[in-house]
Image 1: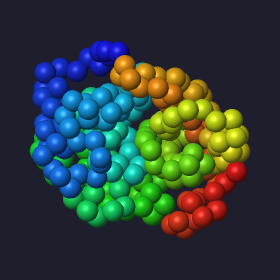
Image 2: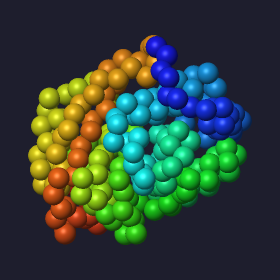
Image 3: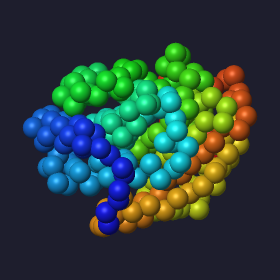
Image 4: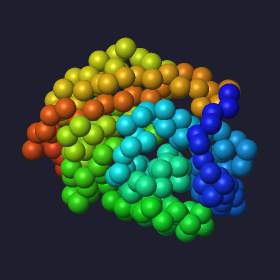
Length: 223
């Protein structure tokens, strides 16, 4: 399946530079480094979120648990008007992300080397938060909610749908002031199966007790 993401030649060149740097670095924090495969599994899977219209309009985006830079780095290239923060807690991965930004000349992306719960400067500052393969959904919701301004959205990448998990996420969302807008089935590349984007909107202020201390969201997830 081919998608037209309306990228110009400069954007395509920057994505190619990202893929080249990823393939060269044997210490990259991902098992998928070969260029053709990474173009699908990482880049296309990241850019499929451009189907969400409000994400395309976001001026400030935070990518939580950015890891090897996806989806945040790919979205920064596709959305040059947006300021993208790559939030990553592991210092080695932070160094990798900075090197990737430099290699591709991505000036509108920067690395925030901290845990999402401890990023106090980010509270209420994002038009959109994105998360891909980060944590169980109630945990992702708790990380994201304090960072979103009212009316802003979270896009969370998920695989096959699960009723029990979705009920737990709905309960967590209600506590955090979030509402589910849609669960969008997507197919970023031909072999992709059971890919979904879960889109939440911040409808009410998140209670002041959030974010909880680092690690508590995982140890005692909301449900």
